View 1: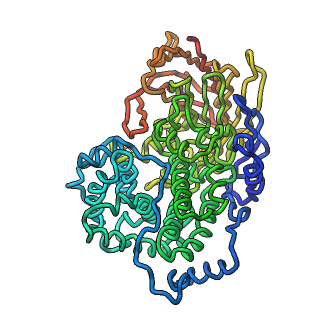
View 2: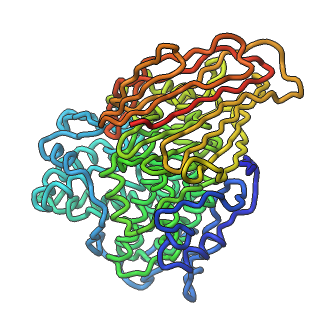
View 3: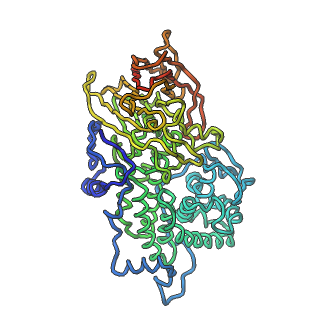
Length: 621
């Protein structure tokens, strides 16, 4: 079995980049055939950051290394680029035509005087922009990153949108006259804000207030200088990438920018390598972060095009590595699975980002480093989390989801995870955000109502799962070969002396999913006594449940009339009666709205010496 460890290891960056470079389409480079997903994965190294900068170095013309060094030492860009000339007046040098598109509904709400964030309308006139104001993280992200500019651009002409942008920008600048204070000056939000200001400069600077335009240009220059100092000190992750992206955008689109651009390019490529794992998945293991990274790279590459400068090859390679893994987390309805705190991000948003990227490829079924396995059989799609949660330094809204799975049949979701912890504070009540990160909020086994990995405050994770062993292979099945994945984690080993092993087998035609949840003692004879367990299957929105008379099975009627049967099979080493029940649950959609749903729960007592519990999901209509 392959093992994912939390230990240093050599990356496979060279092989990845060679495959991208050798194939005209990434789908061919990754070995996909139309309609076929390979059943047996190649040997995998432990998941580590992708040393992209070691493989595709930022090329330097004669003298550029010295320019980069001089700028890093603090010599002003104009003194390096034009030492005997007067500095040019501050202005944006080119108009960026980014293929990224915003949300028209949110843009229309802006024109009507409201922010529309996670389904909640917030009046602009009474919004508190001040550094001491407390808003939900999602609200702060949209407002302070100026992500709403893309929404406004999607819903109005530049002439119509400029007055709205001018109004909001004026309020924001008035509240943030001093740089570095409050959540708005988080490095990630600051980097995204600078990129948004430059990409949407016609909206930002197209108003009639000349004094405000001067203030905006001064703020752009001041923010770029602030990021020059902050980006090198930012820890690895998307925040560091966003900070360096702001530096690069400023270097491309502001006067005397070449020294800043050269300085920023080296930092950006290194930061991308630190943020992304060897198979192209962000180390936060968060699909929203993967989506954000693709969108940001598309904007930066559009800045290069506007400036007429060839970008470093690493930026295009990185975007091509990010896309196939994101596609692997799409269900039949086109929206994403609910992993690491995110809701089911809507298909329209996912499709827009992928289309804007220009990358045409197929999903990567076997991302051992990122940890999400994908199996497709007929119309049925299975997503299976077979890796430890992200490290604390990478986690955004870390969740204890190891060995959880999601299952869909065409556009209908059957088994889901609750999701939405990262959206708490909007329509999702803040008081339940912590609970949505717990193991019980995922479709997996829970021992003694304890999390497999400790869930801490502020999105962080503590001790728990450190290793996951897994093996994927083809086995004989009905009609066509079935795919079997066997995985085990050690999250309960130190507390309860038990390892949780889960085996999922999906038939080739997608009509059967057989599961086994096994508790294996870590000591030779195991401990004495009993322990409570629950195996939870959170059901998709609109799935109707009818328990069988013997309470060993259930009928699952999907909203479109498809019928699946759930059956609890034999168990071994159960220390008493094993029951199947239907309980209340909830599911958070892509707009951040919670929906009341149900869950099937297998529960009882297991012996500390181990146990095995089998179940079957079968499509019958």
